Amino acid sequence: MKETLKIAIVGCGGIARAAHIPAYLKSPGAEIKYFCDFNLSLAEELVREHGCGTAVQNYKDILDDPDLDAVSVCTPNHVHASVSIEFLRAGKHVLCEKPAARTYEEAFEMQKAAQETGKILLIGVVNRFNTAVNIIKDMIEDGELGDLYHIYASFRAHRSIPGLGGAFTTRAVAGGGVMIDWGIHYLDIVMYCSGDPKPKTVSAQAYSKLGRNLKDYAYLNMWAGPPKYDGTYDVDDFVTALIRTEGPTISMNGAWAQNIGEEEMYIDFLGDQAGIRLTYGGDFKLYSAKSGALIESTPKFNKKDQFQAEIDSFLGSIRTGTKLPSHIDTVIISAKMIQAIYDSSELGKEISFDS
Image (cartoon, rainbow, N blue to C red; front, side, top):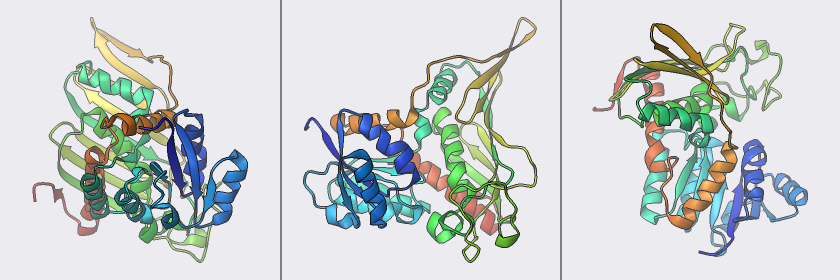
């Protein structure tokens, strides 16, 4: 294995700029060789800003570069599958941002390509590299919560629909709304901490309510905006689901937009000996009882940069062949569960994984 791995960034938008590129630049084992985006000016801007790499408009032009080792796919969701599969079949390792794809069928094709080529395919479920999440996982595995019987996730905001009328709110591009955008992170944390239990049934309902009349949507600010009032809004802005697994039951409520002016971003892990509330992206509290007293504590710990840990682990897995927790073979079950959530909503019935 050569000393420095050559990397291509495909898709030069927000997540690439905020997370992938800074992490690769800090890693001594990586060199960014290409910045690629259909909007060539974005790629050229990054070349100037960082003083490295070559700007490329069409990713197909670099598929056959024998010097290229790996790719971060940071494109919109609708091309996650096609771009990742092409690079895998060209002999490159791939880290594809979440969600794996718009549908389970697309994610399954990605998994098949990875297995057939023997190349690494990781999905950007970055919370599997989060310090607090891994401490909670260890505590659950060590039995500190006792019997973990239920997990509840809430990812609800007042009016936070991103880029109204654009790619985020167009199902053909994004695959869905709040569930596939925010919910994937919460569901993945739940699955990871509880040992990725096999799902049994899903009953869910997704709603597309507050953003449907684009010009009537009131908001204070909008990430990925401004609104495109002549655009499309056909995705979910609220979702509720109950999932039975071979481990704990899981329930969740998520909203990009709701007519309640309170934000809730947390996960509750309920055990018969103790419980944990994890604030998404933050600390957690442990609740228990001892000697007739109720105990509440907030553990303190050093926090790693989860994106840096993700990128460093990706590079390390290329060198050693180590299979990481974010490998497609593990996290594809989340894609199957999200598909079941949407299918349950559309069909108006419970989805069984045994059928």
